[in-house]
Length: 119
Image (tube, rainbow, N blue to C red; front, side, top):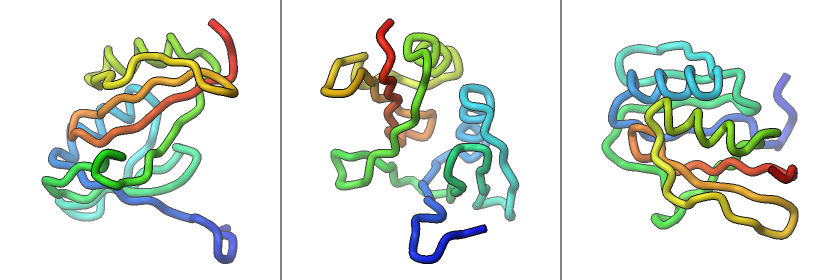
C-alpha cells in the first residue's frame, strides 16, 4: 500500500528496454511487466519503478539523483554486475560508514552499490 506523501515510484530512461531488463533481471533478480513497446515497470527492487524508451541517461554528472543499492557482499555484487554486462565507472572506495562502487547498466544509467561490511 503506498504511503501518503512518501516516495513511491522512480522512472529511468533506457535506450534498450530488452538489454536493461535482461541486466537487472540477471544481476539483481528484478521482475518486469511490459506496458507496450516503450515502457516496462520493475518490481522486487526495494522500490518499484520503470524504464521508458529514450536516448537520455540518468547520471549524477547530469544532475540526476543517484540510486544506491545495498549489498551484504560488495565484491560478489561487483562481479555479478560485470558478468551481466554492467560497467564499473568508480571502483570500490571507502567512505564514512562503508564502501561502495558505481556502475552503468547497458543503457548507460549510473547506479551505486554500497555495503557496511568489510571484505
